[in-house]
Every structure is written in structure tokens, then in C-alpha cells.
Length: 408
Image (cartoon, rainbow, N blue to C red):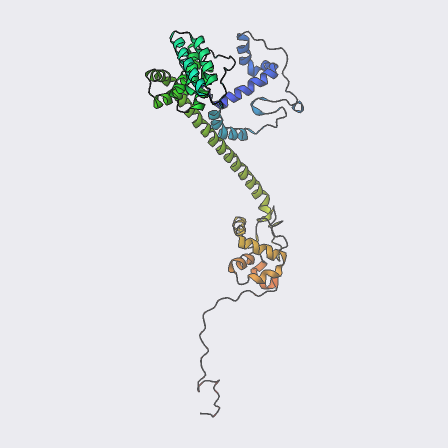
């Protein structure tokens, strides 16, 4: 059943109670008189004395995550952190519901020493096999007379003569069931299935033993296999008896697996969210510290270009030529522009490399007083594109440039 409070409110209440437990005199403060009245109403007693904030150096803690020195999270930060993770924490901390099972018929487990299993490697002689068969007949007769201890003794002798017979183990396990010894039965049935994995009797009796121990899911699994190998009315009846509890357990396991998968997804999402917040915080810090440095160039562009880029420092009032700092920062994210600027800052004469690159050249002109790059760097500006001129007109006899060489 969920608490009638929000998860974040419960966390605050828990923090407050822990603080009061360590500093009970805080309840003597007038603002907390209603809490003091509540404590005394139920027989509690608040120590007399004035409350004094614990020393921060001694590890004193204030409620709601602060500290005595007032160095706790800012309210906005705490609220933001809580709002981000409280929902995930609430879902992850919800207690898993318990399965309500019908435990009628469940008995206390037996803890006797293991019974003899014989030597599985022994190959019985024909005479030993016959003797074991006779002993099995006597054991079955004793079982029919409800002499279960005697039946177990006779089956044990038969097993010692012919330990490789799976049915001997299964039938002895059946006798152990009658004596309310399910663990002994399970050991015999395990051995029988080791010798013969298709022994329906072993699955049947082991399933019943699991049921007596309250292991309903295992019981249903074994009894289903027994009915599949060799249908038996008694095994089917036992299966129908354990099926309701088995289904509850199986559904609960599916729910647990789904919750575990959801928990992993939410934990991964929370880690990603925190990583994004940290990255955004670092980016904001980087942007703030780099605002006066124009995209990573130390000090902006001081002295790197002729004119010194007045006003380009961290506290500058503006850029020359009406350049907008935001636009400049955007341009500096262009790898080509950034590389060119680094090259020119290292050696201003390298501007000649970029005379034919309008994107770089026009950007540089904005930072040169008067835009006269030729005067500033000793370089000629790129030729301006003019109207296209056709081929020079051919001289004619009437033109002033015509000279008659007399060769006509």
C-alpha cells in the first residue's frame, strides 16, 4: 500500500526527524511548538534548553540536506535535482509485493542423513539381479501393508544388489513420502532420474515431495513432466492441486523480471540525464570563460592583427567595424575559419594565402582599421571583378595606331 504522501515529502520528513533525534532541543523553538505538542501528546518528553545550531566543522547537519555552515545546496538547485530524480527513486524504492499462497498441507522439512545409494558403477550378476527382484516384491508387499519402514529397508537391500535400477530408487522415494520425509524422497528421485531421465514415477514422487515442502512451482514442473511421460490420474490430481499457487509464483517471477528490467532502464536514463546536465554545465562554464577569448584564441585577438582589435577584450565595449560578437563566435566554429585565424595569428604575413578565399578575407577586413588590408599587412587586396573585356580591337587603316609597312 502506497503512503499518502509524495516521495519527496517523505524524504524531507525523514531528514527532519533524523535532525530532531540528534538535536531534540530544536523543538523548543516557537516555530516548532506544534511538533513538541504532538510528541508530548503521546507521552514523549522534550529536553529543556535552548537550541544551538551544531558546529559545521563537527559535521553538524541541518534538515533537508543543508549544513550548519549554510553551505548546502541552493533551494533552486535542490529542487531541480529532486524533480529530476524523485520520480525514478520512488519507482525504484517501491517494495515488491509478496505472493499470497495457500500453504495448507505444507510440512516441516526432514533433515536426516542421506540414505545409502549403492555403487552406481557396479554391474550386478544374474543371481544378484534375481535377488534384488525378490526383495523388490517383498518391499512392495510391505508397502501395501503400510509397513513403510520395512519397505524402505527392503528397497535399500535391493538397491545395494542392483544400484543401477532407477525404479528401485523411485519406489523407495514413494515410501519416504508416506513417512513425511520429502527431502529423502527428493534424493532418491534425483538418483532415479540420473539413471533414467524418462522415469515418470521419479518425476511424480519428486513433484509431490516439492508440494509438501511448499515449493509449488517446482512441484508443478515435475508433475507436468510426469503426466507428459505417462499420464497418471493421481499425478494429474496432484498437479491440479498445486497449479493455483504455481501460477501465482510464475506470474510474480515475470513481474519481478519486468521490474528489474525497468529498474535498469531507469537507472541508465537517470545516469544519462545527469551526464547531460553535467555536460551542459561544463559547456556553459566554457562559453562564459571563453567569451572574452573569441573561440579559444587567448585574449581574443589582441595585437594579432594590426589595430589590436580595440574593444575585443573580456570587458570590451564592442568590436571594430560593427562586428557582432555572437556572429564572430558562430563563424569561429567553422573549422576552416578557425584554422585560418590560427595560421594568421601565428604569422600575419600568411594572410597572402587567403587573398583568394572571400570567406576568410572579408572576415579579416572587418578587423582592420578602415578595411585597408594592403596597408595593414603590406599585401594587395584581391583584384575586384570588373566588367568582362573582349579581345583588343584590331587596328585598321583609319586608326591612329595603323602603320603601313608597304608590303601589300
